Image (tube, rainbow, N blue to C red; front, side, top):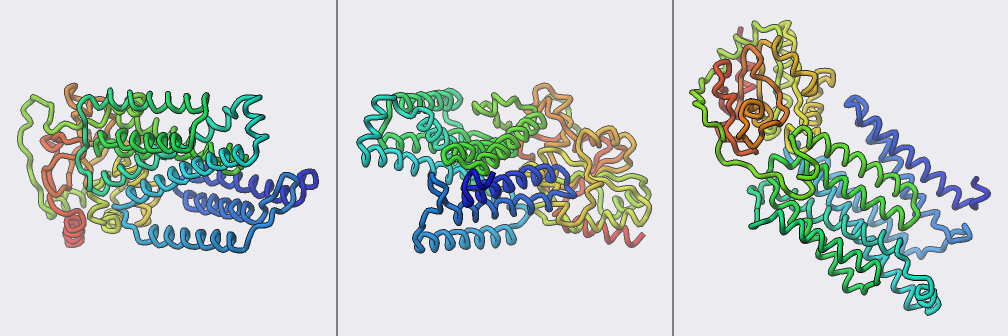
Amino acid sequence: MIMELGLYTGIKTVSYLCGALTFIIGLKMMGSPKRARSGNAIAALGMVVSIFATIFFHTNAQGELKPIPVAVYAVLVLALLSGTLVGWITAKKVQMTKMPELVSMFNGMGGACAALISIIELQHLYHSINANPLSLLLFLANGLPYGLIATILAGLIIGSVSFSGSVIAFLKLNGTMAKPIRLPYYNIINTAFLIALIGYAIYFVLNGGTLASAMLLFLGALVYGVLFTIPIGGADMPVVISLLNSFTGLAAAFGGFLYDNKVMLTGGILVGSAGTLLTLVMCKAMNRSLSSVIFGAFGASATTSASTTEKGSTRDLNASDIAVLMNYSKKVVIVPGYGLAVAQAQHTIKELENLLEERGVEVKYAIHPVAGRMPGHMNVLLAESNVSYDKLVEMDDINPEFDQTDVVLVVGANDVVNPAAKTDPTSPIYGMPILEVNRAHHIIVNKRSMNAGYAGIDNLLFYDSKCAMFFGDAKKALTDLITEIKAL
C-alpha cells in the first residue's frame, strides 16, 4: 500500500489511519468512567501523530514532499507550542464550577477554526480562477464546482453558528448574561432568519458569489448563532452545549472533505454524532423534543410556581439531628448538584461518605443526566475527589432504590428532584424525568436559601412532610455534619 501511494504519502495515510483508530478507541473508552481518562489520552496521542504527519509529510500530487519554507515551520511550531501551553495552563487552573464555561469556549474555538478554514478555501478557489484563465473557462464550460462550494459554505455557516452560540453560552454560564433575552416573536424571527440564511447559501452555490458576499454570509451566520442562543434559559444549557458541540464536529467533518483529510473527517464525524446522541439524551432528560431545541421553542422559565395547591411549611434540622439520623441509617443516597460545585465541597462529601461507611452505612450517589451545568458535570466533580465510579448510579437505576433508602441528602440540586415534574401539569418542568427522592424515608436538602433553581420555580419537595432543610454553604454545612457524626 505504501509503495503504491509513494513513501511519504503512504506514511501520512498510515498515520491518519492510526489517528482515526485512536479517536474511535478513545471515544469507546470514554463510555466508562474508569477508562475515560485513558481514552482521552489515547485520542490525544492520535491527534498529535496526525498533526505531525500533516506538517512533516506534506506532499504534492506525485507523492513527493513539498518544500516548505523554514519560516512557515517556525510559525507552525510557535502556534502549536502557544496553543498547547495556553490550553494546558487553562485546563489545570480552571475550577470545577467553571468547567462548563471552559468547555463552551473550547467548543467555540473549534467552530471558529472551521469557519476560518472555509473563508481561506474560498479565497484559494477565487485566486485559482483569477490566476488561471483556463480554470475559469473550464468552470464556464462544465459549470461551477457546486459540491466544493457547498462544502465550503456548509463549514462556514455551521462553524460560525457554533462559535457565536458558544460565546453566548459562555456568557450565560459565567453569569454575565444571567437572564434569557427574548425578542418579540423571537421564534418566528429566528426561523425566518435561518431560512433566509440557507436560501442565500443555496443561491450562492448555484450562481457563484464574491468574497464580499461570502463575508456577508459569515456575518449572518454569526448573528444567527447569537439569536439562536440568547433566548435559552440557564436550565437548558446542558442541551445547548451538546448541540453546539455536534455543530462543531459537523463543521470539522466538512473541513475533512475539503482537504481530503481522513483523520479530520473521522474526528468530525465522531464528535458530531456523539454530540447529536448526547443532545438526544439531554432532550429526553429535560423532556424536550429535538425540534423545539433547533427552533428555539424552549428555555422559557417561569418566575413563580404554577402549582395552585397549598404547599404548606418547611422545617429545618441542624447538623446534630442529621448526624444522629444518618449514623443509625442502613442506606444513604447523596444527590449532588451545582451547589456542591460552587462550594467546592466534593472532597468534604467524600469524607462524609468514608465516615458513614466506617459505621456500616451503605452510601451511593444519584446522578441526574442534567445535574450541574453540562453533561457529566457531577461525574467529573466527584471523580476529582476519588469517589468510586461504582457508587455513581444513574437516574433510571437509582429511582427504584429510593423506597429502601433511609436518608437522601440533596446537596445543591433543585429542579432535578422537584416532584412538580410528575404531579403538576401546569408546571414548566412537567414531564421531565426526575430523581424520585420523595419516595425515601427521610429527605435532607442542603441549600443556601429557599431561592428557586434554574427553572425559576418553587420546589414542592421542600414542603414534603418527610423533607427537612439544612441551610448553609455546602462545604461548611457538611463539615459541621462530619464533626457531629464523629462526636457520636
